[in-house]
Image (cartoon, rainbow, N blue to C red; front, top):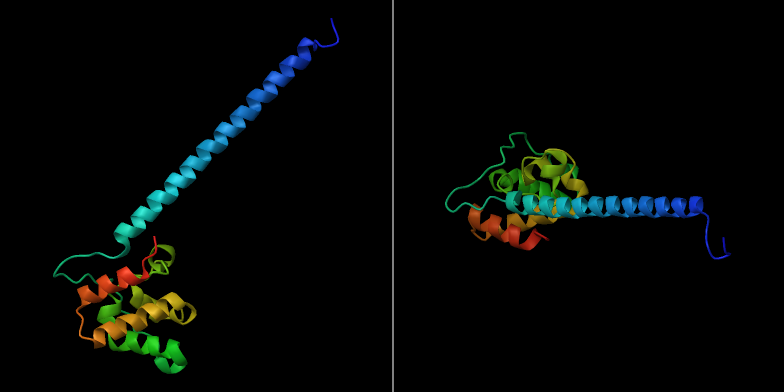
Amino acid sequence: MSKKEKPASQTGRQEEEKKSNNTFYIAMAVVLIFAVGGGFLYGKWNRTSASKQTVGKVERGGEARPTLSPALFFGKTSNAYKVAQEIPEVLDSLFCYCYCKPNFGHKSLLTCYVDDHGANCDICINEALRAGELHKAGKTIPEIRAAIDKEFYRP
């Protein structure tokens, strides 16, 4: 055997190591493909279910619990709870773009205001305040929903 030739046992081990490495990389590629594909499908699901756009029909989340008192909070937070108290039918018709519906089981933006969730989330606060502005401007619930979706949805 010359100096350049390797023993058969060493060559066999190298072949097995290459196969093992290839298997690992293939498995990682499959996992990555499923992760990216799953993320895409989840994002597509969120976009289609985020807000039901039905002409002439107002979709409600079905939140029936009372909101917390605005007096418990200060500033913008208090104003957002006041909006929730004054126009619950509007907030119950809106998807909350902090994605608390799929993540925490909330029924609508109104659900954020039946406890202190709304007080701890800038998205909830800003969305409620914007809905209040649009309502005061005379917009209908479908118009408010369309405006909120356009302003707060981020792909």
